[in-house]
Length: 200
Image 1 (cartoon, rainbow, N blue to C red):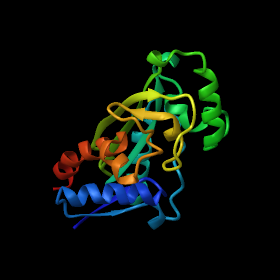
Image 2 (image 1 turned 60 degrees about the vertical axis):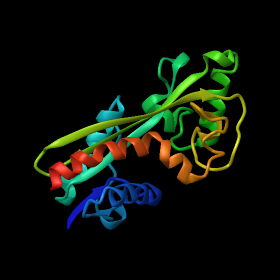
Image 3 (image 1 turned 120 degrees about the vertical axis):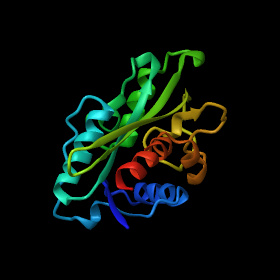
Image 4 (image 1 turned 90 degrees about the horizontal axis):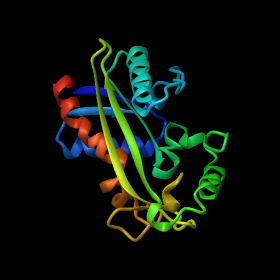
């Protein structure tokens, strides 16, 4: 059985990709970065999701000697020209301050009419082999921004994002419902044929 590393310490991401690989019937043992405590995190210095995903995937493949998958994702708001984009996690200045990021975003679009509040979540997933081969897939979930937080599931911008065809925010959905339509789920599922090709 091939071993594959997902470049994250997030157990939920590992479980999500593990489920997707299992559903596809791929004989792959997936592990996260907790299995490699001596490997440092890779700085996300790229200016696109693809650059950051590839930076992380190649660094982890080189450090572990195993094929590696990495992803980078964020919220892209139409009237903000695609921002916050790759800066989504640190939009307010401090990395990972969800409440401050959300407050700033809501303030920036407070005077935007309801029919102009389009946005999408984007995720780029990258697969890199120690020998240098790479594959990249993007997944998107389009929708609109609401004016006030709704729901307690999820994280980041989930409480203000309503996917197309839904009336609930992604923070009002059950995790399984969100996984089925999410940008990350789509990117990971799109990577499955490449994993089968390169690890087969």
